[in-house]
View 1 (spheres, rainbow, N blue to C red):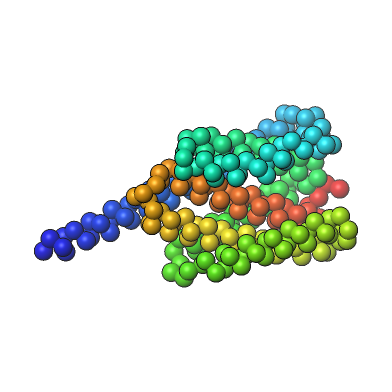
View 2: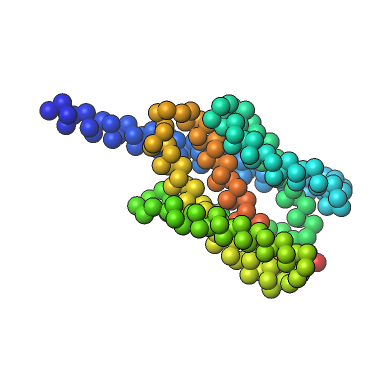
Length: 236
């Protein structure tokens, strides 16, 4: 009798803990997105001169920090969760500053369409990652490898080929890659909580997951923005 009584409680407690973890992770990820959007809006509408200066060569330092900071946040997430959370918010502000320069080249309609589209894709794939019973590790690993290849190809195209059609093709491929990574990262963080949630800081784990999903969302947005820009959404 006692065994039957205890098993349901363990299952319920696990589900409650997992739901709380996912709520925290997605909540912080959503907050980071809102911080970036607000920062980009304020910069574009209130500090146009600064945005112009950044677009003319002042982005070097922010971009360097933009690439390095995620590694720092991830490294600190399990050791100092509060510091990592602050780092995530700082990173969201820097991302918003970088994105504000895109308003000089893309129309408001294009940016809105990219944001709505990336939100729809992200929500759909994150939901798939949560509810699917299929192990997505193989797909995530393949998507990561494909992303490295796409980055190399994009750099070659940007400096040598300079083809708009090639750029469009790689942007479409990148959207597919980040959609897959969104599902995989969601499932991966869920599994990590279930396996290590009682051994590590769940707050740190949630910050790390929020960072990964935030990066997936931002990259989805940037790739879709380029696609919409190619199809007439650019200010040029």
